[in-house]
Length: 454
Ligand code: SF4
Ligand code: SF4
Image (cartoon, rainbow, N blue to C red):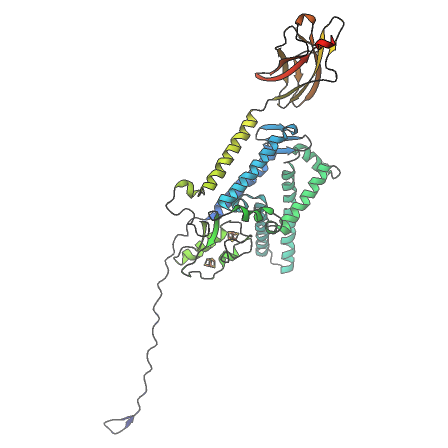
C-alpha cells in the first residue's frame, strides 16, 4: 500500500505474469508416400486367378485320374511315365521352397489361391454390408439379414465355380460338366465335386485366413527355410516416431501388430501395413516406419549400393547354389520331356520255350512287341533286323498301325532257316523300330539248338 499526493491511500494490485506463449508448431509439409504394394498385389492376384482358371481348362496342366494321364504344357504324359510326373511336381515344390528362402512369405501374400479367395470373400462381405446399409433405410437386423443372405448366395455360386475349376485339375472339364448337369452324386467324381464345393464354401465363409495359421503346413515350414538374409516385413522406429494411430494393425487381414515382431507366424508379408504407415506418416512429412528388409538387420528393399543380383535376393553363396540346382533340375526335366518318343515301343523275347524247330530244321524264336501311341495322330511302327543274316519275320505284317492314344501288343516270330548258318546257341542281334523319323534300338538274342543238343 502507498500514499498519494492528496493523502489518499493507493492499493497496489500485484500484476500476474503473462502466461508463456507456446511456440507455434510449423504445419507439417506432406511428402510423397512412395510406392504402394496394394495395387501390385491385386494385379498379381488377378493374373493368378486367370492362370488358375486357364491351366486345367486349356489342358495345360491336369493330372487326369480317369484317363491316367498327366497334361503338362502341351505334353501328354502317361501313367507309365510316372517318373517324369513325379519330378515335375517335385520341381514345383522346390521352386516354392526356393522362393521362401529368398523372398519369405511372398508366395502366401501374393500367389496363394487360398489367400486370394479369402481376401476376395472378405471384400465381398464388407462391400455388400456397406451397400445394403447405404441403400436400405430399414432396421439394422433386417439389413444384416439381407446383406448376409446376399453374401451366402454369391459365395455359394462362387464355390461351385471354384470347385469345378479345382476338380478340372483331375477330371476332364467336359466330363465334369456332364456330371454336374446330371446332379451326379453317386460316382467318385460326382461325390468329390459335391464335397469340394461344400468345403470351398465353408472355407471362404468361415475359415478364410485362419486356414493359413491352423491347417496350412507351409507357414510352419518357413522357420526352416528362412535365414538372416530372407526378405521380411519389419517395423523400424529408432527415433520413436510412431504416433500410435494403429492403422497398420487395422489393415492387417491376419489380425496382428507387426510392431511386436517381424517373425510372427501369421505375417504373410503382404505389405499392406507398409502402405498404411507410409500414407499416415507422409501426411505429417515423415517416411513410414514399416519396410520390406533383407533380414532383421539388413537394408531396406530397393536401397543400398549393392549389385543387381543381391538386390533381387541372391545375397550369399547358398542362394546361388539353390538357383543353380533349380536351373539344372529344370534343364534335366526339359531334356527328359523333349526326348520322349511319340510311340512307346517295347520288345521282349518270349522265353516260355527257348526256341522252336520244325521238320526242315528252321529255328523259330518268339518275341512280344508292345506299343503305346502317346501322340495325337495315328502312327505306323516298322521293325528291322541287324546282325542276323538270312532270317525273316514270321506271321507279322511289320507295319503295325497304332491309333492316337491306343496301346496294343503283337507276338511275332523270327525264323532262321538252315541256310542262315547261325552259330549254335546264343546269337546277338539288334532290332530297330522306326516311327516316322524316330528310331530306337533293342539288343536281343536269338537262340538256336546248342551243339550237344543236336
Ligand atoms: S501405422 Fe505407423 S505410425 Fe501408425 S501405429 Fe502403425 S507403425 Fe505407428
Ligand atoms: S503384418 Fe503387415 S505384412 Fe504381415 S500380414 Fe499383416 S499387413 Fe501383411
